[in-house]
Image 1 (cartoon, rainbow, N blue to C red):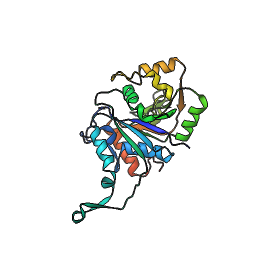
Image 2: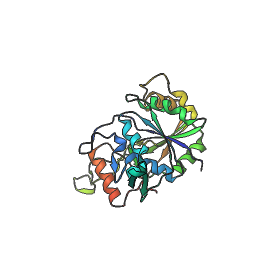
Image 3: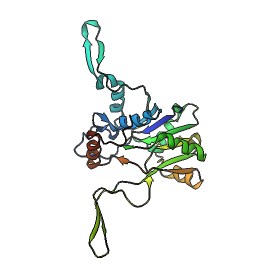
Image 4: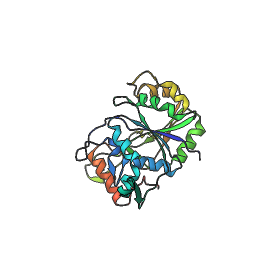
Length: 264
């Protein structure tokens, strides 16, 4: 499969998650030893897509520093000051062969404007992927891309059922509980889980002169109105990291070796 470029939106201020380091941008909040952003990228890389464009903004230097110093951060290091500070890296557990473009798209820029600012790094590519820096899923990327290519529209959005926040009760009509699900999935409609596939024509729906354009409002509404958006139904695992509860859940799954999104 062709190594398709993936734009990741990781510049927003997001919401603070109490109990987690507030100095970190949300994409750098850890799941196990690595930031959630790393997990997202590793998922794409496992499907052969290893070329990333990271749209930086709020505290983007933290993300830059992580990748610029990746080997030093993830391995043991010997520094030989007698040899002009020569470095020897040991025990490289997770060697990556990714290509990463760190694009400064502005601290206040909104999602649609970030995409158009990152567009020059797509080169002449006709198709690209797009996602957010704060959610993991076990999406079959190969199937997603194949679906996009088959329907021929400009954008595919991955539709997911959001996990429920509270216990769900079922009764028999008289008040006797017949079923209780502590962490059910919502039974209503699907929401956008990110994991988009886009043709280059999507960029025509974005205004390169603005910083305040939200991808999910006017541009995507116009795409839908023009019949240029298709939904890929994902019935598996999807979870964003919006709250401390989300952070705890994802870390518990990872620590137990039961993380559905881990495909590497």
